[in-house]
Length: 446
Image 1 (spheres, rainbow, N blue to C red):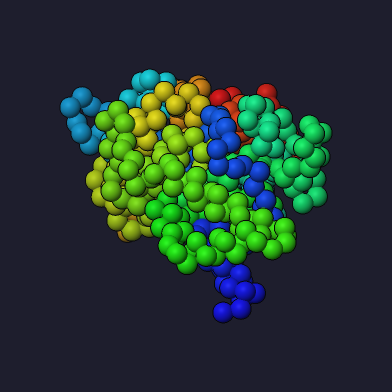
Image 2: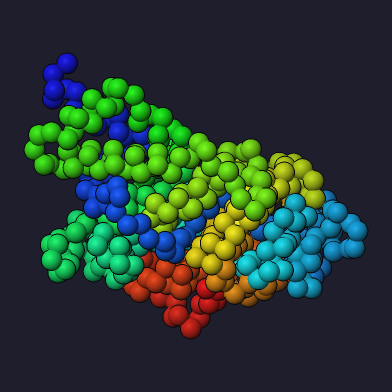
């Protein structure tokens, strides 16, 4: 095979390891094996795709209209000894009984639910609503990048700064580059670690699309297994020769990243503190996020998603389709928090779903697409043990368009609160263009 053809094929091989073409085009890692790795703040974003039913997740058991609107799928009011009743939080709201594993987090002040939150867009399209939430620009379809990628570019840190623990913001510049006068010349934004931003998914999610580098991989084992063997060793040798163009640079640093992950030895990972992750795909993704955090490979942003929340038919109440999904969700989150233990002081978990569901149950025992929803913020630094947001009520005149839970908190207010309070971002307009809610009107969860 000609060397030119082999190199071109090799680039495709790197893509199959979970690296997007933009990663190959734009990234020259500054992190090397053996360089000091520093611990830092971590944000884990979890997308519940399909529109989770907020009213049965965070149950307004103190609202009589809730029971009128949902005669067959409403969750019973809290009652001692009743395993199918809501788990009371504050006398008005309660958790679905399948979310019982999250109740200890509430008691410890680690869990901050937010109700009546979502996008101001009126769309009921899953595709559009997810896109708006991941780009951070409701009703604007032309946004080229995701809001997490904008954060990564804005908060780019050169490798030398990372080694010193510095987190100075980089002014946005063409191509994601900035000048940093520390004797090392120009550095790529966000070059402190090849694993700074990782999505446990088959492809780069919309929220991480953009010029700042990120890695998408189905699993840690796939990333390492596909990068072993004599053929890849020969490919690496070729990448390490020739001119110092962008492909050679990305190729060399990609193999460094592979070796960094091998050194963490994910195959031998054992959860700690009695944590037991479900064997579900979602459970295993979050287990691998815990592995990356504890391996100290420089992870700052982690993303995973989980589907199955589109419950038009046979949704169920305390039991059934939604209950089963919530059980896996809660057991996974509980295992992650238990596994990370005191590291949760530096970790925030942010859940999201594109919109909620209709307040009234439909004729098929399910719920149709709605408007406002609910989310959770979990972490050692959050203002937990309280339900955040203003409750709009479920009386006919209080419903959005006469059918849905009304929106009282723009999702961008919560996301901006998390990235400024937890990660130290200082340019909300860059992250969420057009978002004009003043900070004093945020919920101040972090």
